[in-house]
Length: 306
Image (cartoon, rainbow, N blue to C red; front, side, top):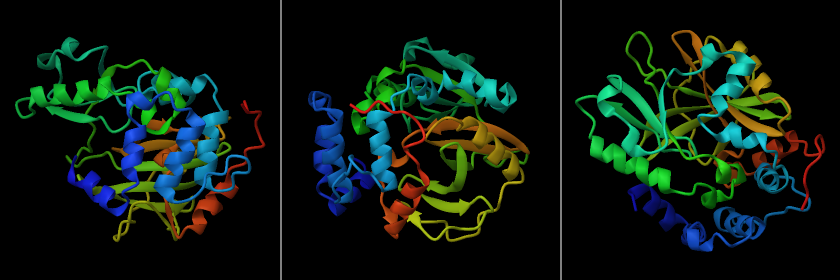
């Protein structure tokens, strides 16, 4: 257990229950029961699935009742590329180096000087390979652990249960001046309309700064789980075009987060996220959980209520 997880456990001992329920031996627990227990442990609130009003409640409601097959490709980091290319163009995809079904198939000596490797079926498994510097044995161990992990069990985000487990490598992206170009611009899209965006800055092993803006790049007065960046965050030059792309990529989806990057004055796609924070991350002030919930209209599409 790393320091970050230990700190979280000290703040909320009930997270031990969450960890226990996420083990494969508890996979028999129904999704609805799991979500109710974990929501209570994580937020201290009772999950209202009959009449959801909060944003987090509605995300968990969508896990249970909006199970469209296309979502499986949307969360698959390899399969989603074809979907995105068909909507905004292949030129907005980070160049692909390769895709493999297992660790042993990767020829590290054939990889470029530097690239990013990650699993297709999860979140957070990205590792950077740099020839002559990276510990290949450590990279293999990290990726194998991620490849063997059932990401669905962590938060019952059902599409991940059906994603083919693979490893992809993408070009390491940076600006021409050598600075890392992967500043995240994450567009929160409600019923096909981007309503806000947040940035992730100052990433460390202990966390990240998450700062919310409206679509005119005005800071919004709330935080979600992470503290906002205390310093100014510049508006990307291609922000208006990003908004257009986010709207296109979120069409016909009740809620989705569209992640984009601006690198060397070009827009690149990151990923689609259906349930940010797994529907468990708190807001400060708390009222914004309801404010965002009011933006998400669950009546606009037919759902499979079981």
